[in-house]
Every structure is written in C-alpha cells, then in structure tokens.
Image (cartoon, rainbow, N blue to C red; front, side):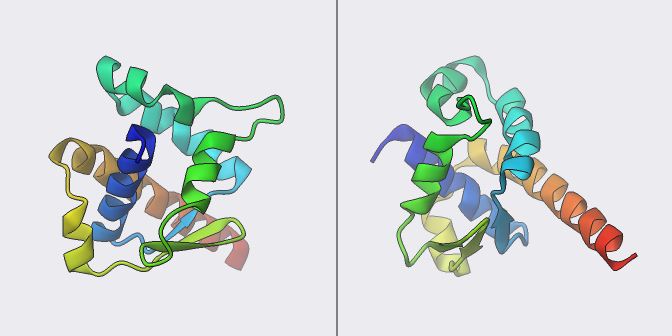
Length: 124
C-alpha cells in the first residue's frame, strides 16, 4: 500500500472520529480543501505525499480521486461526489496516527462548517 493511500485512510478515519460521516469530493470542494490540507503538512511529509496535490489541466486531482475510489468497500463507498464512511469506532482506531489526527481534526471541522453554510444557503 502506498504512503498516499495510508495517509488518506488515516485522514478519513480521523474525519469519522470527529463526526464527518460523508465527505464531499467534488472538484469545487477539493479546490478549497486540498491546498488547506497541503499547507498543514510538514516539509518531509509533503514530499512523500506530493502526488496527492497535483491537479491536471482541468483542475482535477486525479491521483487523490483514484485512491479514494479504490478504498476498501468495508471502509468507505464512493457515491458520485460523496464518500460515505462505513467505519465504526473500533475500525477507526486501526488507522490512528497522532500526526494525522491533528490535521484531520482541523480539516474535518472546516468541512463541517462549510457544509453547514452550504445547507443554510440552499435552504434560503
């Protein structure tokens, strides 16, 4: 398993831990969140995971989307632009990493705020 894949498993497990059960992976969402995630990584970690943050000429993060689409079906399922996490707390503990938890918590909270704003706008 690649370092990028392991990192995303750990990141998504942290999302689950902080109450994010469904993750939006639309082009617009990734354009906002991946640069934020990238800015939180230390230099050595960023070098290892550089391929996750490469967008093609259309602005798609193909490698990121490819890894997310290949998640184990017991871990998560992709439904269009949504990734639904199928974890429980025990399974989330398997992927625990203290370094990733701090980053994952910050990104999860920001995602929840953005989704809440989106729901408010759609309801108005």
